[in-house]
Image 1 (cartoon, one colour):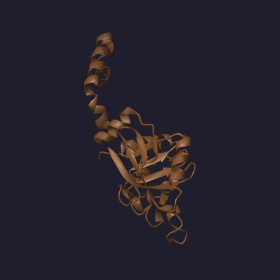
Image 2 (cartoon, helix red, strand yellow):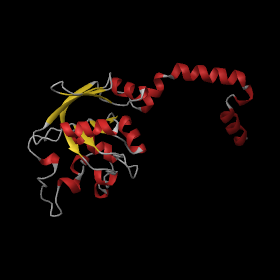
Image 3 (cartoon, one colour):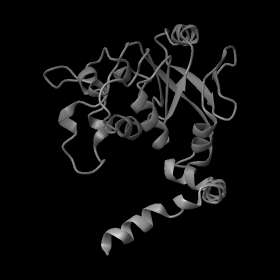
Image 4 (cartoon, helix red, strand yellow):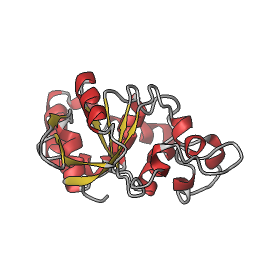
Length: 215
């Protein structure tokens, strides 16, 4: 996966509580057998009106927000169904980070498994960030994954965000879940050796059981 060490980009405020994955990626865009074209479906019912015309009032359609790479959302962002298409759509659209005071659990895991930063902040920090983004003029935020810090581009405001060490490593090194696990292979093998010495009757139990069934 593509590494994410730092990011300076336009941030779009999306002050919607409980924005679920069906809103992020409506069901009619789940019919394909691959990941392509999901950027068209991202937030479709907010970006477009019922007649298919562009909703010029929606933040991502406003002048200056064409290259938005950071979304600032409300609490419980990404709740609802487990569809990974929501994360794929965000990334295809160009979003590399979502800042929110809370995330749907499965969505949160899907973010890091695909290289998208889900930066969890406190409710008070969320309010301060939204206040900074309240201007009609687009505002850039700076994200520092190494130090778990969010700043305004002018350097006047700084905030911290939560990020587990495992997830930070995944982003900094561009690793998915399998690659991250393989980094710990020596420790995994050492645990296996200790476990087999302590409980020898459990050694290769699955293999022995399979052979017994085949007799």
